[in-house]
Length: 284
Image (cartoon, rainbow, N blue to C red; front, side, top):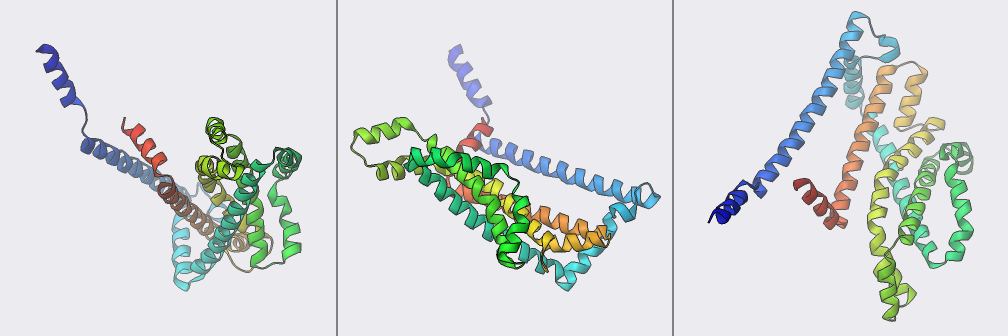
């Protein structure tokens, strides 16, 4: 009887799913409040330092000046126009680069000879800072939209290629051997075993490439452009307008956060079992 009573007591002490959800919710809310409080405190200290003269308004700007500049640029539509332009370039470069790079990386699985032949070239290209290619790309494609997208593609494609190829090489060999023993062709092995196993790795590169897409677009705008957040930041820095520079940087941060969580949503839709497993581990 004592053993049964002990088991019942242990069962009652285990947290219920609802309490676990509440605990996770409270943790998320608490973390968000702490992060918001830290940012607010930093801005208050910054403004206080400017007010008493410890921080140079000319060299660092001020939160109040940034706020006024943000309202002005948002009101006249300049900020929305530049943000839309940069966002379009980044997303287009991200899509083209990630898709083309992933396809090329998966295609290398078909031939070990070709993969080993081109691998040194891939390593060499990856070792070159892609920003160094910006002047050449501008000369090839001009100063318009195409050059910014091409630069974003150059940054994202190589990352996607390497990630997809490595994931294809690491695909489950036992499953592939089983399919071979069952008489499956190479194409069937590719579509039934290799591609499904590479999806998590390819999705993981989305998080990296969305940032590279923004970098490519902004760097291209730095070099030559009449629109975009990069053009806005470059021009403002030329005139020592630090408040406008901070507005551009903060908007870029916000765009990066939004795109990151869009990728997180895509991951939940494409590979829900991975997300469910992660949530289960957090609950345990």
